[in-house]
Length: 246
Image (cartoon, rainbow, N blue to C red; front, side, top):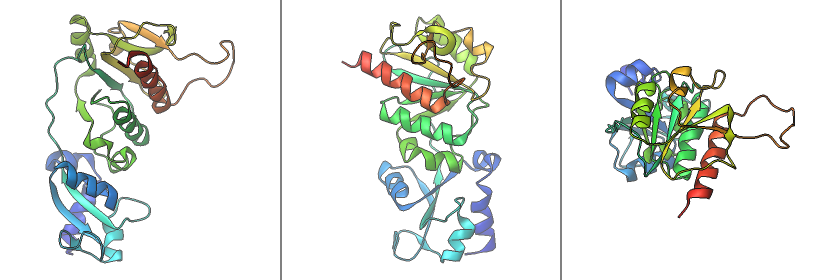
């Protein structure tokens, strides 16, 4: 490998370069095999001897260590073209979607994408300050779910305003919300989850049509101040699917 090739792959750790090049990095045989099967276009594939032979540029373990974004280098690495998804103008009244307002942690975002895939949520609408879904840490945390969940970045408050105006439910988890286990839940609409420390911004919260609370147990228990956003997303999605499954 040339020094320029290695530098280019390493440069894709930076969001600005990923955006300019419309590329991202994926590592590991299983994930890359899923990408190949999905039809997403791989620009370049690097692998150690015995992996993807005939389809990849064979590199040495030392070269793979220089290419890798992981603490422990994998056996293969792909440079993949970012998909281009058409962004709807509003959420759907028939399909459940997620919205993320300022979720910063790549691990949380990756886990939420994986949860969305598990619960059949095909679209996630993100504020522009939410972590980049093509960050290498996010890609690895999704465990391939990024291939089946469309992630959109947009001015989120405006999107929620249009959605609510169309009569589509906009759900938000708030400390002053109605107990989710008692609330009426629809099969469609959008569930808004907020920043790890600050929660949902006021600009987004003003467009909620339903405010929901995940209660502590028992109700008067003085425990943790809040739930991790990915954990809360899993609880909310599970309750929606439990109640609205056909």
